[in-house]
Amino acid sequence: MRVAVVAGPDPGHAFPAIALCLKFVEAGDEPVLFTGSRWIDGARAAGVDARLLEGLTPRPEDDDMDAGQRIHSRAAFVATEFLPDLRSVSADLVVSDILTAGGGMAAEKLGVPWVELSPHPLYTPSKGLPPIGSGLACGVGFRGRLRDRMMRAATGRSIAQGKAQRSAARIGIGLPSEDPGPTARLIATIPALEVPRPDWPSEAHVVGPLHWEPTNEILELPPGDGPVVMVAPSTAFTGAAGMLEMTLEGMQGSGTRVVASILDDPPSSLPTWAVAGLGRQDALLRAADVVVCGSGHGLLSKALIHGVPVVAVPGGGDQWELANRAERQGSAIVVRPPTPESIGSAVRAVLEGPSYARAAADAAAGAHDVEDAVEVCRAALA
Image (cartoon, rainbow, N blue to C red; front, side, top):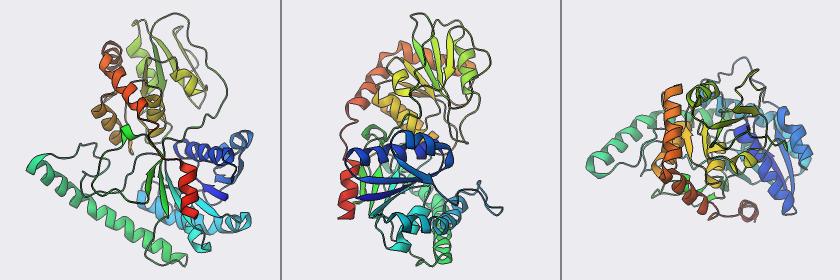
């Protein structure tokens, strides 16, 4: 099976796409990855045929603050730019990231079946849940259900606007206004971060998180035998700022050791009980006692499959939703607004309260109760 895998350059979406490609390679299939230039060399070094996805550069008329415009209008442009490359690889199947909808549009133009990759829980609206992004648990009783209905009605206008934007974008590139959607959806999360819903789509399959390490370097832990606090600032542009600096200030004099996993250059000076740099996160998690992170899905799910509890410092996007799901599951404390004092207090509470580690261990124990992503794709093609 020859598969074109399409994802934008954001690490939270490019990394799962690379991980999925490696699963295809291991299964004997032929994936071709199309993504941003930043990760092409790393993907090739890992053994993936990686190529540049055309059309990612913002145009003058693009507004990244308008999520509907960013997803739909630019998707149509990406589809037209990507079409010649997709035709050239003769793909049997396309897997397109949920935020890079142009891959699916291009597949539809060529009559190639396609699968959507969601590197997080299922975020489609449900008649049984409050709107995704609210962070709220499902309402209980008459008042709770009424609250959820009212919130769904309020967000329904935005959803309708998004559908209208998608229809206009599709018409603009010669597709029917009605979007038939993908043949299947890969929901790349762990069961502990999903919530029950009465209308789970038949085409959606929970396949477990897709993680890829962009380096083989191992960060050495600071000297000593104190608890290890791993800090992983968000890679999303909506992430909370200053997380590492606040954590360091909050942990001053606590006897802990702080290790920060970052993609960019480390700070010029750090205390002797802290290190920072680009290192394999899976190796750090095997040593960590607690993780301070923005609660983006990549690091949050990675921490939980390693059984490590979390202090969540959510920014924008879906981080608030995910942080609250982890807190309700018992494996996390949500900190907002973040300050050195609030982060330090939350870290100490997690280290001193064994219930958080037990809940994280429960999440890890159920992480493998998922479907196989490659088999879902093969079934979609069949």
